[in-house]
Length: 434
Image (tube, rainbow, N blue to C red; front, side, top):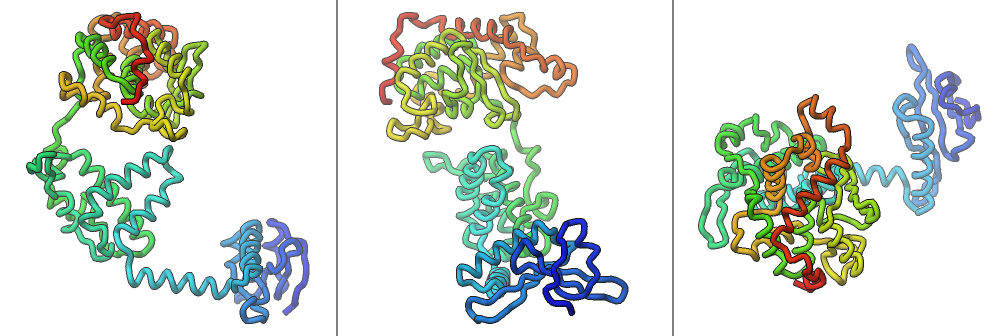
């Protein structure tokens, strides 16, 4: 064989090399193409040649065929391997140890908790927000870990999943409300779906064989009642719009960022996450428009929110005391934290007069008011709520931003919200620590 014969390495020209032997890449030290003649064709493979830092002798390491690895990829891999050598690590030994560790892990298995954490980490890149990872961890750690967290994934079967989904749910007084699957069907369904994804990950990494134990269309579906049969459609309770002025007047009796955040949510008909995660960079106080980025919107599309007079009053006052990039900081001592997801609901729980209502319900309050007392088209109201329109004709109409129409609409809504409010009320009293 020819040793160290140098040729012009290009992605196009590599396939024409037919001279048997080792052909060195002039631009990547240690990288070679090894050509050997087969029965009917030539075989070309990438080879990394180096001096072992532990054995002090020349070694070769295969990097795959020319068809499986491109020139650019081979060069990148060679650079990584040369760095290992410089760090005193023999790449061949390192590869063997990694393979041995993987085989041991497969033979010994991993726990469901370990698999879940690795699966979640692997999916982070595809999620728009880190909040998704937190939601996965919270639900899995609450409902799955106590039952199957420490079990090896290859030991978990459908019965384990069924037991998990049928665990008893107790209220604050310790009274059993029913099973997880029956009384919290929506959450239980989401947990089951996430467990199924985790077991799909385990199957892809060869930690389990056979069917996915959390697959509802498999055996599990015969152990649980159908979710659609038991799930009662539970819309967020909406305060009657006739009481919105009364509610906001009572809300003004409470201090703190949570109270102001809840009022801004009502005034703008936005969602909890959109308000508590709002940053000053999203607001133009001159044009009186709040632009919520697509990444923070449920529909994944940028949403422009016109700011009415009262909303502007809140923002202008918040600006004078701002200590964070967020409108509503979670702590005065932490610049980059915002109010928690529970902050607004907790605020409402301090108002027993309105027991049973939730922050998200105010969007329905706004819609009911617009439908029953105004002449605005439904499309304009839906646009104000940033709802996804399934009807093609309405969707085409919605492509127009209608910001001017919505500005008037939201100003009228602001007047209704503030109908029972003393216009001379001092905002500063509401910023005191709760």
